[in-house]
Structure formats: C-alpha cells, structure tokens
Image 1 (cartoon, rainbow, N blue to C red):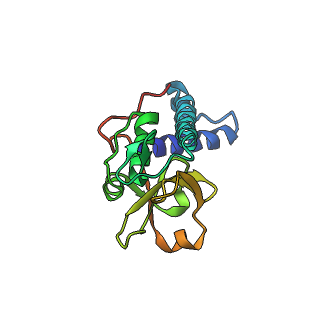
Image 2: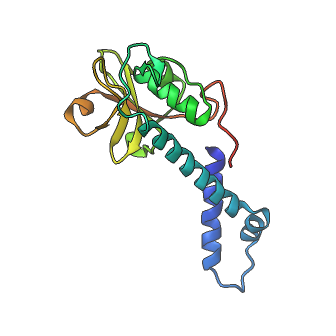
Image 3: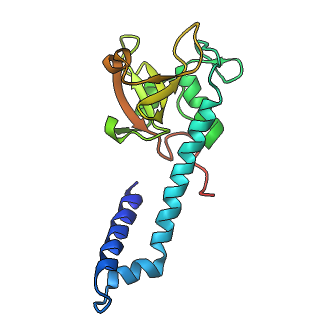
Length: 185
C-alpha cells in the first residue's frame, strides 16, 4: 500500500511537471519517466481492478448456495465466514482464517467510505462484535451467506437491519492469509 501511495504521489508530480513550460528542466519528471514508474502504476491499478472484479464475479456465481452452519464447501453449503474464505481461496489462492472475528483481526481496518469491491464488511448479528461477514460488491451492497434456511444472496447495507449492526470494514492485504496473492498477470 505504501508503494502505491508513493507511486500516486510520483504520478501527480509528473502531471504537474507536464503542465510546466518545456523550457524548464524537470529532473523528477525525467527520473519517473526513465524508471517507467507511470506505466507500472497503471499496471498495478489495472491488476487491482481486475482482481476485485474477478473476486466479485466469482462470488456472484454462488448466489443461491444454501447456508450450512460451519460449512465451507461451496457445493455442500457455507456459513458466512466459510463463504468468504472459500471465495478468497478459490479466486486468489489466499487462505483466510475460518471464523468471522478471526478474519476481522487478520485484515486491515478501513473506513466505510473507503470500501471497494472485494473488501470485507462485518456485522454484529449475534450480540457479538464481528459475528457476521460478507464481501462488498459496490453500490452499498454486499454478498453473504445470511443464516440457516437461507441461501447466499446480495443485500443492501443501507437497510436498517444492517445499518444498526455494522461493525466495520476491512481490506484483505497480501499476507493476510497463509498463501500470498498471485503475481500480477
């Protein structure tokens, strides 16, 4: 994340440098261009976007899978944390902790206004912090395995039930699981 912030800062420096008259030498802009940092930044952005898209598309493919307490098999049934764990493992090769509270502890805290598709959203549904988890898909919606007798589905976080129980948002960073993210394609 730190390297992404540095790259963005360098990109903004290049943007300002491009606006200056050509008669002034810009050593920072020349350095950034010579190192190919702008093209690398674009590659990182595209990879992050495609990883999030792949994660969400994969998760949506399991709409209708039945809820099963303690389940972590996308064909036999899943509970909320088993669903998240299975999607991350299947899509990104990352093994997250098994329980929702453990997933919250193993991931990076972000504010709700920073949510991006693929981030995790946590709720207090059992009178216990971080007792429920889902995957944010954008537009204030998340996909999750809700409860016994139900199936994996999409919900709107603006519904009063979810607003009252929202515990926080987390971002899964490389190293959060036991298997790292794959190399950029």
